[in-house]
Amino acid sequence: MAQAPRFIHLRSHSEYSLLEGALRLKKLPDLCKAADMPALALTDTNNMFAALEFSVAMSDAGVQPIIGCQVDLAYVELQPGEKPRAPAPVVLLAQSEGGYENLMKLNSCLYIDKGGELPQVTLAELETLSGGLICLSGGANGPVGHLLQAGQRTAAEELVKRLHSAFGDRLYIELQRHPGESGLPEAERLTERGFVEMAYDMALPLVATNDVYFPKSTMYEAHDALICISEGAYVDQQQDRRRLTDQHYFKSQTEMLTLFADLPEAIDNTVEIARRCAFMAYRRAPILPKFADDEIEELKRQAHEGLKNRLKVIPHATSVDEYEKRLDFELGIIEGMGFPGYFLIVADFIKWAKDQNIPVGPGRGSGAGS
Image 1: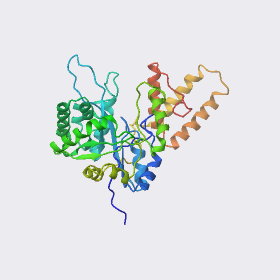
Image 2: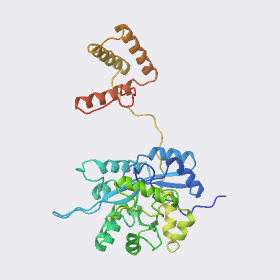
Image 3: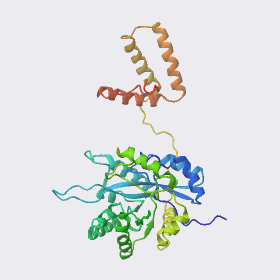
Image 4: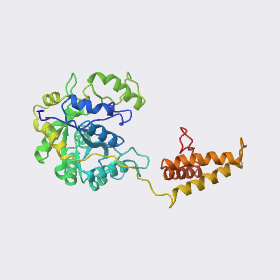
């Protein structure tokens, strides 16, 4: 009988964390099985591009997928004249289908009506769409951690209270330890005591995560080069740039248990959170709007009208009858495959783009581009 898991990774970045994550999606089930982890949360940065592919790959392999996202939060509501602060990440995990829908809405909020700012959600948006979601506070480099690093303990506590009001017993204070030769990174060293004290004072649960970007520690240098490509920086430059550590890899349960031996409840809560999450994205047939009452006839009408207009302006390589026979043959293929509605919809997009002087098509030579 398999031994019950002691630790589950709840913060991981796949290749869909573009120019940032180096976990190959197809390799995740094997990583979990090798570590005897029956579940894994995928929390790509500010996107859910992998949600369906991740859900299918993991469930097909008998591993529980937990759909999440690392979301940048605008955690300070600025006063007039106050200097803007960069957003900082929290981790959101979908407990249910309702939570998954809220997570998708928050992903839209990241990018819509932001006036050219970096992707971010506001506290108000997070509070409105908190249902069905578990929130991890973001660790040392999250919004609470930033306030602690700045010596703003009171502001950090107020932010935690506001998050607690929104998420209730679904809020966890997140701890991370990525020790190097000289001990913990400065951000983690400066914030851990504050996190633990706030959690105990406010009766909030702790949770331990490892911020996973690559499968093995030996991949650190290659991943560091990837970060440089993303930042337009050089590996050997002296100026400040984003740097991770060789500890940001897919650690084993034993490694994590050893790392947090003094706070076993933070480890245990990873398994509790995995048990609280019970939703995965599922396959469904394409959901397309109905373009016309008779899409086959509408496609034929538009196609023949388009051919007639084209033949007015191009030299003829053969007779008009031959052109029309070939068009009818192609239309028969499209009809037989059940694609008339799809072609009409894509054609509508392309026509609109051309009317707005937006370059579009023929692209890779697809039928839609044609």
